[in-house]
Structure formats: structure tokens, C-alpha cells
Image (tube, rainbow, N blue to C red; front, side, top):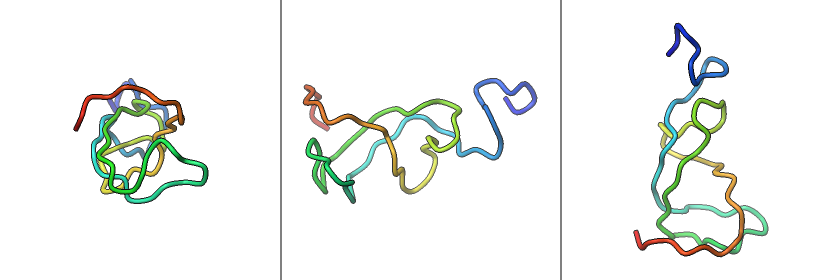
Length: 72
């Protein structure tokens, strides 16, 4: 991927696009989740700031709409 630039817009980058874990903090105005909730999801593949191969992921850009999700 590095040689072709495929899926990577700029370097350096933290790779990974899928994640799961437990909510540790909430931003202002968040009501869909609470600290301690189990969560999972995918981010934007290859874009700086959205990599998931790290201890904490701070931004999933989730909306606050209610959705039906399977139990974790």
C-alpha cells in the first residue's frame, strides 16, 4: 500500500478501520451512549485521524439517533 498510495491519503498514518471496546468518556451533548457501554464500529479507511490500531479511539463521528443494535 505504501508504494502505490492505495487507501492511504497521507503519511504517517495509524492503520485500522474496525474497533470495539468500552466507552470511557463522553463528549458534550452525547445522550445515545453512557460510560461503560460496550461499542463496536468502523471508521474511514485510510484517512488520517480515524485509525483504530491504538489503545484509545477518540472519534467515531457517531450521530445521536436511536438505532437498533445487537447486544455485545
